[in-house]
Image (cartoon, rainbow over all chains, first blue to last red; front, side, top):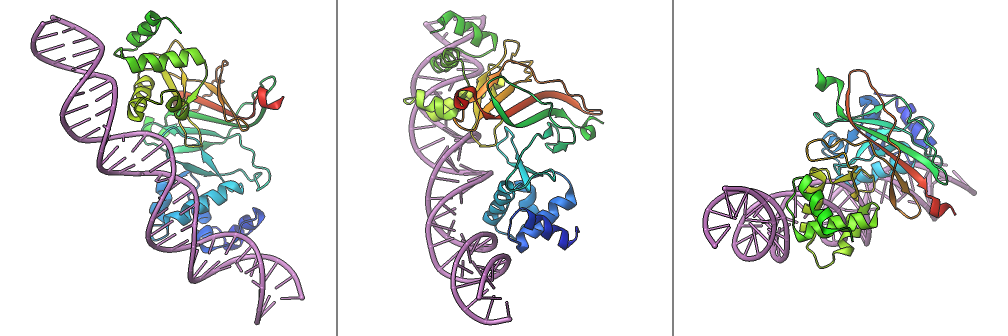
Length: 138
Length: 138
DNA sequence: TAGGTTTACGCAATAGAGTTGCAAAAATGA
DNA sequence: TCATTTTTGCAACTCTATTGCGTAAACCTA
């Protein structure tokens, strides 16, 4: 598991209190290195309370540890933010790929191409691609 | 209102039965020329049944009349599809702008820049921009 | 490191979006 | 017009997520 001191540092730098639950959840994200639906987390933390899990995810999202990935399925999915996010500056230009076969959502490394619209202030950009992922194509 | 014959033609070409509800809803979208949340529609069609409204929107979405705009708020928003969409071929590369001030979602005319990922089949692309819209900036 | 303050946790209850089943009504096609 | 298929409207329900509140844990300061 990612070193306890490291996880603690991440929580502190995002102005979050250090609790057992938060350590567990953050460690899980760091270890799995993939996006996670609420279901995934509920399954991993069976013994934990659902409400606490929701509150943990909300706190992480508000403080720039995780980002919520918009999805028309109505199931929230979460991914780790870039290192540059913190509780004040929480800018996203993530690109995500959702596989229609397996349902997994991946964070892609590339940034979203910059789009300028006259008269508008663009603060955040989310590109969601859908189709069939590498694993399911094969 | 958009001519009855025109609305009828649109429904027919998308293989949808012509009913009073569908005519009303489609006419509303054509007249307003903007995206609409379920709430907007519920308000416009107060006397109508919620379930029917949901089913109408689902039918329109499945047959390529409307597209559902993913949004992390958990509130579905719908917009008219391009003319090229039909019940078989329902490809989207819409670009949307959501204003953090007024909450409105606009469909932008430009298409999403094409993104290729080696090993993946990309079938749909949704770019969601967030910030402050022209009206709220002023 | 003790004591006071703030924040998180866990439980129960609640809110709200969206769906399902079913019988009656309407649309379609011959 | 008649038979078939689809839609509508009502009630009940499912499921995700939130709120209230008392207790427990974390934090801060002296």
